[in-house]
Image 1 (cartoon, rainbow, N blue to C red):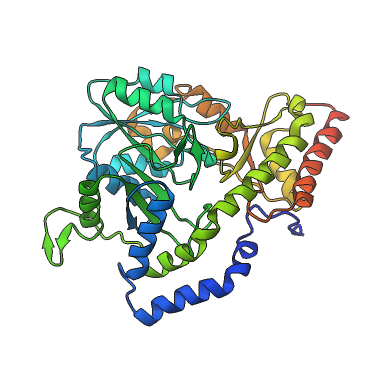
Image 2: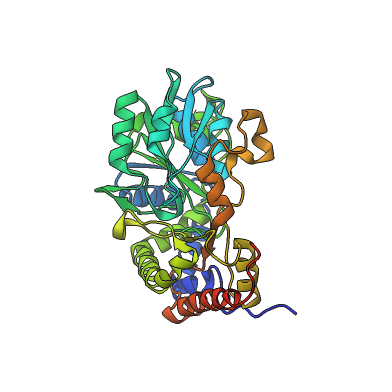
Length: 387
């Protein structure tokens, strides 16, 4: 018998219901104009999102992966160039590098935050290094000051993967405003999500913007005049209309996520001695908590899988972001990495658990989640432990 969901992992209906009128109006306006490909809604959203992120230009594309691949190509990354990126990320980051023919150089992460280890990144630099590709994971930026020092020291560009960090801030910088360019995803469950796939490249560089505009549209600098080998990756006008309607609420939603994380932190504090430890927030209110992630460590009487299955039985949905690090994925074995090469990333993949997090999650729902975790630990403590 399937358990009744008490606390969903994400509740998009609760987010969209109050905006029903605005969303319908935005969609219908686009339908009436009939400009479904690179129409007015796309241009307006590109300008609005870039401005909200602290830069001048935005290029809407089909998905976040394309934003990385086309952005790196527009920035001048070519085959033979090395790009430094973390092993602890979604595979889209790595795929974006491989698509431009560059050589990905993976490095380990900080075990407390899950973010790229900048000391490891420095050690990985070679004369072929052209770019460092930090991933602002789970809603928290990699240290901007640390990245800028790294880039200056080794004369490499910074290209940000901000797919999970819409409007995140740290050290006076906003996600997407730090490097030569940045990639965002508007997958439906993101802090700012559409009704399907979508992505954007943002930058301060006008020339890079022009190249990206061409690359996303078959390499055409003008209609039927193709100066580059591009592709078809254009943010749909209908998706742009949806995203424009939602953008004014993003700051409010991010604040709600941060507030929910504070409740989680407080309630989970007594459980840290039993191995349930939230990832560290080094950004204060600049962390936008796309995900709320905890480690189920060795001192917990339950394994991560046992915890997850027991929570599902109690109607609490969770996620794992991500269960296998990039270097151990079968598709990337040709890169030559081995088990044990990035121990922190491998450890996190074995221990992390994403708890329910979305704007509108209530204190009562968070209390339900934490109470269930506590109950599971207590019940196991009175039984023989066989970990």
